[in-house]
View (cartoon, rainbow, N blue to C red):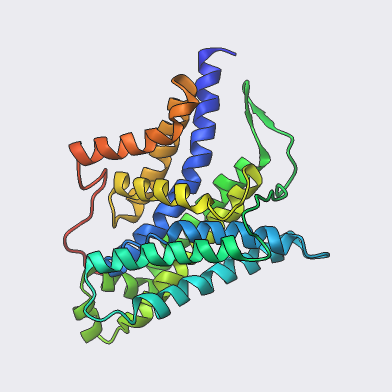
Length: 296
């Protein structure tokens, strides 16, 4: 295999992993964009999506598509409950207290998964969506599941763009992100927008967990590292910027894959945090940052 083939192989792997990081980063960004809350339970939404998908797919006669939809709906409900039962009751909230609360919610959800009779501390594999025979691109190989990951990620990105640009609810969420008080005076129910935000966050986390599970294993602890890398991707792209979250995810995935392939796989996880430090030193607002004023 030539160096070009190796770089192509690393790039394909980076784009595949970057798609997952972009989905997790979008979950962070959508919540922060609307509420200025950094939801550190986002990684646990990924974990729940993966474990629910494994459980539903084991039900005899359950089609894969139905298991997919049920897993997404389950985590979407969890996202709504996190907002209604954990975030909303807080009196006089500030950024620090909300961060601590979401970390507590993350630990609680992970503990529930670890202690549950269905999952415990085991690791579970999920069936690939359409076989495991790799597809050759030149001399580089790409699994069918990687195509599913990239395709589903791009589809969701297009649906989110349509949602935020062309629907009343999406425009209401954008208005709340710019100025919640002004949005409230214009008749937009901010609390309802926040609930929808957490529902979307849960949905994105669930989809990320479901599509990555056939390439790895699902367990109660998988959300920790994925959540941290998704957060790194959101910071690299520019926290609060939806396009930035997407770019940050792909940049992080490619950097990680190139670093693991060209330097050592032992540094794979460290590369994300080195990239985060470099961005914070050079450009604290991230690649795209966030605009000051936007009219919707």
